[in-house]
Image (cartoon, rainbow, N blue to C red; front, top):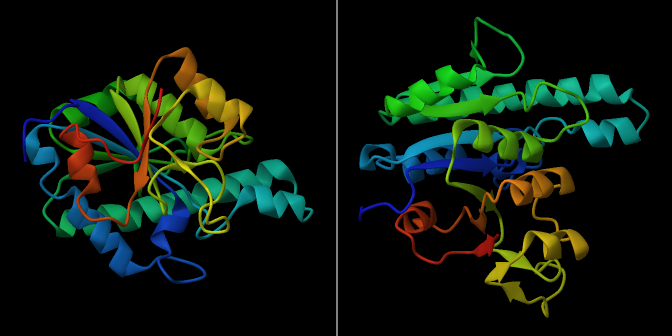
Length: 237
């Protein structure tokens, strides 16, 4: 790997990304693929933290819309992120990468409690840090958790992994005429209501000038290309 452009990054993975072609749950082939994509990155000197969603197992917002009390639904969603974090940790460590799972909700038998200084120390020691359970608060998404954790640990960029290769004017799967943005401002993302991250996360990044790179997870080598400074996906900044 060439000299990396970034010293410390935060990778945001959606829970849906772990489903693969399944309708529910965790596809071990996808988890192994992600671990292979990350293998060797930390050895290059880049410090990698990961925030993972839980939508492949449980979506609190959808459950709330169907009548469940919102706070309980959101806490259930946080527990789903812990399951995904443990699955990813297992795959990474099977590929020889030291990891730590830090949870915003205390569960000592499974993960370390989230402490900012401890997270930074793990990164400095070359460990991949996986943040579970979002912010630990209902009404906040894992997108917001990604923006918050990225700023707390001093990340240089958020790498938002998706199923498409960037930000488009509309859903490229449904609209063949959708056009891709190479770069776009935070304000335009908010004004155009583009589904990059939720508005709270975008606003946090805008206020703190934290760039976001939206890219396709499923194109092998994209993570490495971004870290080398190559133009991949869409830059929000």
